Length: 126
Length: 165
Image (cartoon, rainbow over all chains, first blue to last red; front, side, top):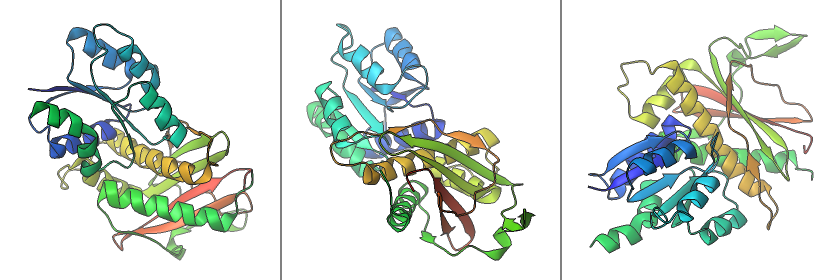
C-alpha cells in the first residue's frame, strides 16, 4: 500500500487533494495529513512515504522549506514531491522544478491534472 | 503599476467562474446586484447586511498590491462546503469547516488572478486568508466589486481594492 503525505494548512484543500489522488489512481493508498511543513516532516521521520503532496504557502514551515529539507536529506531525498499551489508563476514553477519537485500543479486542481503529475509514479509501478 | 478597472473585472469574472466550476461543481455567472442584498443603510448609502455573511480576505503582494474579499451568505457557504467536501447535505457543516472552505476558494481565486495581473518574468505573493464577518465594501475608485449568482439562487461578491486601481 502506498503511503502518501498531504501537507496543506487548509483541511478542505487536503481532502480535495486526497479525492483527486484517489480518482487519479491511488484509491488504495494510506493518506496522512499535515497542516504545515513541520508536521509533514514529523510524519516522514516516523516512517518514509512513497509520495509527498504539499501546498506552498503554509504557516510555520512553507512548501519550499519542506521540499528543500526532503531533497537535502540522505534518508528522504528519493521521495517524490508534488507541489500544489495557487501562487505559481512560471518563474516559481521553474525554481521548484530545479529543486527537484516531481511536478507543480496549479490550483484549482482537478483529477486529470493530478493524474498527469503522478503518471511517472504509476508507470514505474507497472 | 496601475490596473484598469474594466480589465480587472474580466479577470475577476474568469477566476471566480473557473474556481467554482472546478472545485464546487456549481454554475456561477456574473450577475447584477440584487436590491435585497443592500438591506442596510450607513451614511446615506445602502450597504449589504453584515449579519449572516461569511467573509474571507487576503492580500496579493509584490509587484501588484491588492486586497481581495470573498463574501457570501451562510446558506451558500454551507452548500459550497458540502460540495467541496462531499458531505451529507442534510447536516449543516461545522463553522470551522465552512470558514476553511471559503478561505481555500479565495486562495485559489487569488492565485488565478495574480497570474493574470503579474507582468511576465515576475513572481507574486499571496497571504494566508483571514476569515471575518465583515460586510462587503461598495464600489469606488479604489474598489471593484464583482457580483455573481450560483445555481440561480445565491448572490455573492468578490471585492478587490488597492492603490493599483
